[in-house]
Image (tube, rainbow, N blue to C red):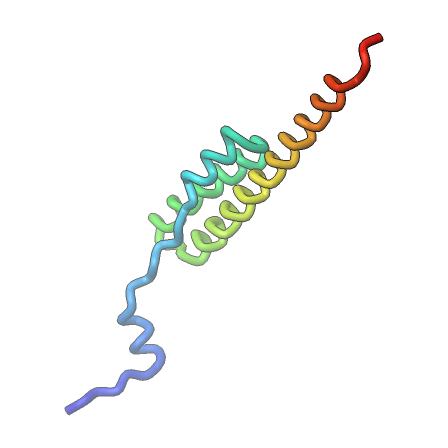
Length: 98
């Protein structure tokens, strides 16, 4: 005899996936790029692990998503800062001496 599961029964049979914490990306963005956003991303990646350990998967998912976006934003700001610094250095060094 086959048993057909309803939506609530089938959903309870699947294990919940733990959201990714993006700790490595957050650590890289904290050290090599725009560090204020990197620190916030690192904090949120730690918050992801803590929330998933406590069973708060909705909070862990939200913290994971925020950690990813802050890490990417930190890398983008870091790249823009490096490009501007190199352009300013080239502009300064290419000027005629007095």
